[in-house]
Amino acid sequence: MVYIQNTHLNDKKQIYQACAQIYGLGHHHCLQICDVLGVSPETRLGMLSTGQHTLLAQIITQNYDTGSDVRRFTRQNIQRLVNIHSYRGYRHIQGLPVRGQRSHGNARTVRKLKNVIKI
Image (tube, rainbow, N blue to C red):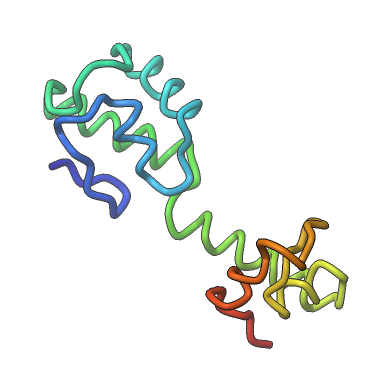
């Protein structure tokens, strides 16, 4: 197991799949990281040397926002919508669909399970 950005990554997975488990990194960013590292994306994470592991961690921390940074940024954006009393902020507070979806059908189960934002 490799530990990068507060995430345990499985050694047996391919590099681009393992990197995608880090919150804030998608497959596209993982393929870019593999290009910078000079390694094939299909290479298993366990096949990398310790130097490549440290370089991988360094590339991710320097070039990408991940983990708690992305979560904080998203939370701040939602809080901004709530503070300016926008329609989207109101929908976040109520725990309803924000982007115009119907609230009669599928949103019923979401309303039961979703944690409502408290002001």
